[in-house]
Length: 267
Image (cartoon, one colour):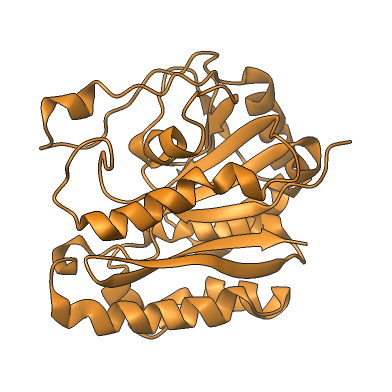
């Protein structure tokens, strides 16, 4: 049996960075890139597969990519032509996709599969840094439309057995995601207030942690940090899959001065 994998919620940055200049502060991006390059080093063993929940895919029910060779999905716009030639040709894993659906069914959760969808930038951009050789089989799983935090905590709990099977579960989002205020220094305080709440929440005991996450919209500056919560919901899935494991914030940085954090859960 494989060593139990941790669970991670990571910031995937903005657009096609750092492979294309996206006009964001280079020092901030350098720190984030270093964190993502070091991600394989936190694992107890090489992963058998990656299961990624990207903020950039929502479906009526949780839906898995089932293609053996997923294409690329350039789901951003307005960037230089090179942005649309980036490649991360990791293999898919139809067997894992079917297993994910089976786990969800056992938990009483409806699911679906998509044999044609490709890797979106919430997956391929950070993974180009973490696994640049694209050698690890990778499956994406969608968020569920409606973005109910309790439903996503339950989704994570259903996926927890994968951690003992060598599957590394990754929630890919951004702990501050208010693009209209990203360049506004007056919003720095709101980002800091929400990040402080986030830090207190993820290190709490599992019952308190999950209760706080389910009620996240009452957090300080919650809707200033996340006018729409799709970039926060991958954290709920990660926390659900964490079970009783402890949370930590091994990387904390900024994006245009706005505080952002990565969250890890491990025994």
